[in-house]
Image (cartoon, rainbow over all chains, first blue to last red; front, side, top):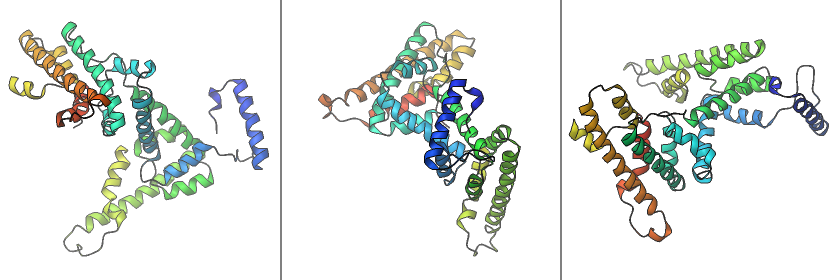
Length: 244
Length: 82
């Protein structure tokens, strides 16, 4: 459940102690099949599975949106927030979409304006002095995205052998190809077998929906009603390949 | 070309590309002038947008250009998302 290889001895002992306390309270002892305790992250994951997107993509997207909504209001004067932005000269092209979204909110627009006015000053001064207007650092959201991605993938790989999780996952949209590939590398044999087989079943369903979507565009079958799953199948196909 | 540049300017990544890759000095000078003007304009508009958020100047009307100043600055810094 935990990434224990990253923990120090005392942290491991503390977690073991906490598990025992929670077990005593909840009456759910650890079994031979694995710990039965599930943490906040697990419940979060189950809720996310009910959404239509790849759960990892969803976690990244919602976490980055939340991060910016807080930072542009509360962390505006914090050097740890501003300094990396000054060296990366703002966010990269891909992540700037999140900033555009943040700027639509009047409260966050103020923060965006303060940050970008400062960045324009830097570019202006560099342009007239050195003529070099390239970034010297990495987009902060790219770094945060990597962290969220590895957390989400680890969470998924840790629980993929769990029966309760598998039941929820079967009904869900499933992972996009990129995140499936990453999860398969992280998960243990039993878990990765489940993920691969489940993905194949989802893919078969998607292909059947796509076939029907195409068939019903033929004038001979145009009178047949298209189901919602069929109507959105082409969008699901795109999201399944490139993520969302 | 110069007229097009004066109208909307280059984004920062493409300005960087021009300055890193162009061997000829003459176009660089022209672009430098256009770009510094462009950035100064954006900066002024953004400054006005910020000033009008202050309670003392709240009564002053925020123009459409000022409303879009944040987006123009984001597009300039990262390049337009096409």
